[in-house]
Image 1 (cartoon, rainbow, N blue to C red):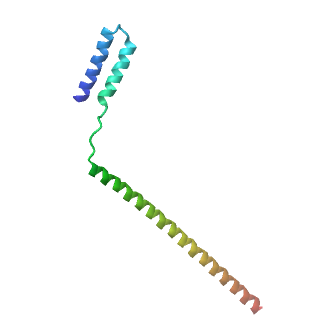
Image 2 (tube, helix red, strand yellow):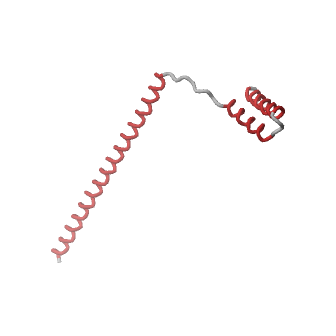
Image 3 (spheres, rainbow, N blue to C red):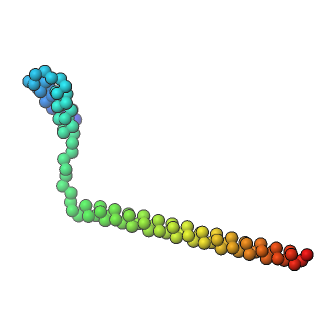
Length: 106
């Protein structure tokens, strides 16, 4: 019902402009669209400072959590890389020891 009323008022303003403004349909259409746009705009509402601060704190906490998780992910990645490197070194040493044993046994 509100939308219809807004549309009707905008059409009325555009129609009146067309009727009294010299029968210029393009200007009446532009005026109709502008008035319709203005009618559907929402006014700026009062924001409670406490709610705004809570929201800002929530954003800060979220950012800190994200950074913390990213840091933990990087540390885990480094730890896995280190374990892989140690395993490679160990397997290389084992291989070298096996080769030394084979050479000695011949």
